[in-house]
Amino acid sequence: MTHIARVPSPAPPWWLALILIAAGCAELPAPACAPCRPCAQCEAPAKPAPPRYEPSSFDAIPQWQGAQLAPGLRAFAAGCERIPVQSPLRAACDAAGAIPAGDESAARRFVEETFAPWTLAGPEGAVEGLITGYYEPVIAGSRTRTARYRHPVYGVPEDLVAVELDSLYPELRHMRLRGRVANARLVPYWSRAEIEANGALRAPVIAWVEDPVELFFLQIQGSGQIELESGERMRIGYAEQNGHPYRSLGRHLADHGEMALEQTSMQGIKAWAAANPEKLQAALNANPSYVFFRELPPPQAGAAADGPPGTLGAPLTAEYSLAVDPRHVPLGAPVFLVTTWPLSAEPLARLMAAQDTGGAIRGPARADFFWGSGTEAGALAGRMRQRGRMWILWPRGAPSPP
Image (tube, rainbow, N blue to C red; front, side, top):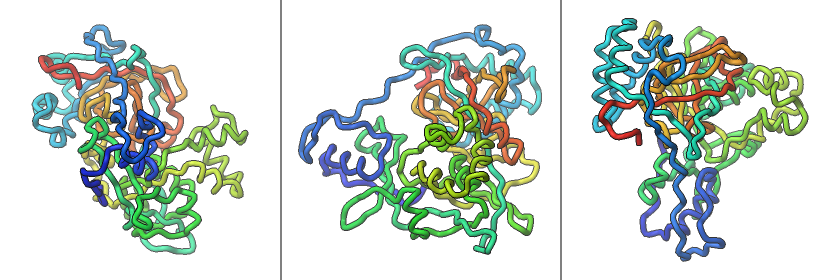
């Protein structure tokens, strides 16, 4: 990440917090006292209610015995170097790398001897949550603007200021606030509508694409590949965000009577956009969030795990990497997921690796399933909105998951 500015420590905590809220913080709770004057003594933001980690057994996990574990174990091992050495997971992960790829019996023996399963539940005991899907889009584009490719893919703007709060509030270590400085004041950064209306930002353009809807979904996914006319592919990944809250385009269209909620898959939204070009920009602007990208090393053919890097920093593995809420699921941990295939009651149960996060992934029993790259992966991701359960596999003998 770039353009990180830390606020000087002498500022009174809630005077600072109020400024930061004005600067586009969608996730920071409201002050504990209201109204809060600059010097009022307010309590720090409340911590989110903790999840429940309930000890379980492998025999109690549905579909455990029939699941293949070797692919998920390889995905877990791919993230070892990114797991802190002081984490209980690190030694287990390093040992997992020695298990022969594809040796299912060795993988199962290792997993069952090394880990103990913990049921992940919400603060009130709910064990089932929403499982959605995401993927890496591949869209046509160019490094230069042409008559065909005229929609910019922006890098990080020069005037974007990011503020981390962990030095003031350790419980907010996963939150980052964004804004810009105007007249010596920190103000909200430009919204999507303002960025589109202004027509240009103080930001590098790293590519140009043809379709604004594809660009919109590229931002939602957070990474992608741009196929150039030469056949070369450039990979881009999330670099920053404008600080505005994410709003669902599908929900907006349903609320405004444009389509039924059950039709708001990615495919359904694209079909609506093609049929309603005059309404498109206003609908896109209903989501004020805007993502900025950076260029990544190009994909390598034949690599075992060659998805885009997730939040953990390791490359994602198609169908074996999960995006989770890191407040509840430790990044890098192996997770056993029990859900169903998209738009189906067919069971989908497998060992996954928690290697990514997402702005809409909030809560203990909530996850985003990485389907891979390209059109087929996009079709599965766009249709996935299933119920599911998760078990964190945690090293035996270690304290319960944090």
